[in-house]
Image (tube, rainbow, N blue to C red; front, top):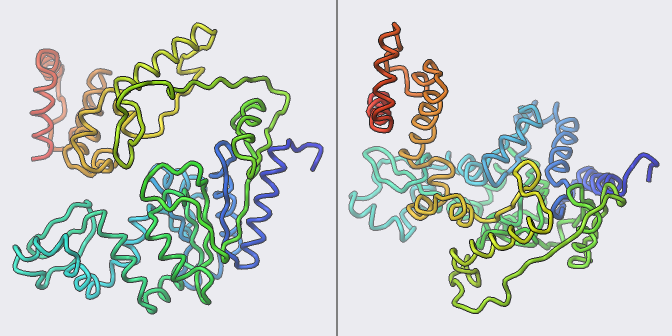
Length: 419
């Protein structure tokens, strides 16, 4: 260890060296990085290393490094931190899968007709006919010239096409290196298909799995990945927490001990739990064993009150409260009814629903601009079909109208902007 390196920095460097060694040996690997280890940093450094290594040959052959992310937020961050390098294709798993399969229209049409969930829709439409297959908004629909896939269709179709050797060869030639972020929450069936069809097979891409199976959130995620063709690498660093917290974590998870940046930094651990609560807990795949929402809220408020009495500063500038699920966030932040209105979180989180996209991208920015007296920005948000203010009297008229019936007026303006 260099005298200038902290224990966490040394652990981070060693893990990254192991990643580079796997890349040099063309061996797939799994980087297991616990909370606070700097997993994204390692992923970015791996991408930078790969771009330097393959910039010329990949560009010449029209190949790319695929970096599959779990969210669009992660995609945007990775693209920004790699300067949107042209040999890196970074996108979500669904977008990546559609990129792979979208050109196989004949095979897709045959496979869709075999899917039970599509058979009734196609029967009503008189069959698939000459319609093409597309994936854009993520909703099932049979239109005049096209059949639109749902999110849930894309990965099963990709898995089916992966049974075809020609498809696998094309995939491997286009993407000789595939890195998967948050692998533990990546679709279980898809990861299993990668394991069966690619891992350890000659001519397959080099795979890099980045994540932490202890942080698995979603029920359909693959969890811990173990395969003889994948080298496990543990990143034994923690840049987020003080030593007292890390010592507690290490007792919970001795197989992946972590080292902190500053062992002398003070801190303490307090654990609050609700194991003693007597009552009917929630059921279901995702919520089994959870407290009812109102009881969970009461427990959170009681915990916060205890911490404040103990001297803890809960101001947002001093304390971050992590909530692990969209359902808890919705409940605590007051939009539970909105979350319950949609079967799929992506409908509102990724603005796939047209009304949600309109409210978030048009109505709210326009209302914020009006409240800040930025009228040019307000009309820009509403769209070009809304006339600009030409004189002071126009501003006074609009202002009076907004102040008396802001929502109604904004709604009418918005309708003008989209008609």
